[in-house]
Length: 401
Image 1 (cartoon, rainbow, N blue to C red):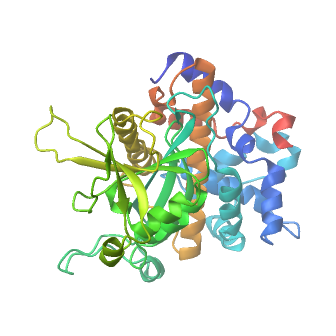
Image 2 (cartoon, one colour):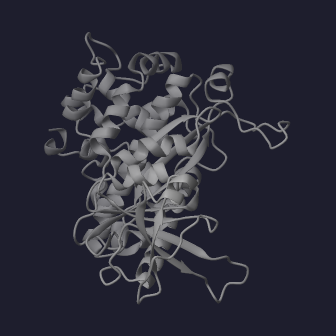
């Protein structure tokens, strides 16, 4: 859906300042103080302005540094709390301001503010009162500089001959399925970090009341055990060669089995974790193998197998969200512009904060229109934000608190 009622809601939400509403000035200044990055002397470009500027860079990936600054400053002089400079700075001045700020305040803002946002009325966000979340990962190209190459590395082909055109960083994240908010995100150098390494950091954001979906790549005894200890419910696909001997057949076609750490543990029946197994195929799709899911939800009456099988395919929401970040917000042919590793980290956190702002905005619009957020056009929302990002003069005093 690109226009109509929801499009109007998006425009209305923007008129109260989506960015400052999501990250109030006081919170930004508190994050700067906590990371010892607050502005300690009078500067042409105060650090709290630089925070919003880095987010604006993510909205205008193809614009020059000075053009983004011009957009940010236009019309904002009426907001005293912002203390904006009178004219755009030179590119060198902007780069120095970004270097001075670093990435730590952005990391803190992400950890403090980027959380699941679905409420009771949110459509597509729940299963039996459990918040649906998924885990997955991706990679992002960064600027081709010697510093970035050394820090992040590149993708190398199977025979070690072909290397990717650009250095890359690797990321993994949880997504709130109903809103497509990416939270609990972790990232690191592509060459030395695997998605599984990052997954260990990401699962720390699971909590009781969530139902976590994951592809078969992520299953290991240790990771499953750690994720289950968060008290979240789990529904993960596993490989068909994983040994799962049926111990009790259930009326819905699923069965109970035990997962063991090793063959020796299986032999001696020690350190086992009981799971429920659901297996199925798509009869109308040729060439598809058997889907094999395991879950911590052992009661088939509470969560029937056919319902869980349908819920599992909501996992593709995270594929869509990652695609939105890489092709619609950033641009499929656009490379992150930062030339040094620290600024890459800063830019990436700013990018994820901006994606959160857009998704939060879309969720609020969907609630007003009584729609599923999936029916709103992400690309249309980005276009609206880009048109109105400079209209800071429309922010009410309450948004600055």
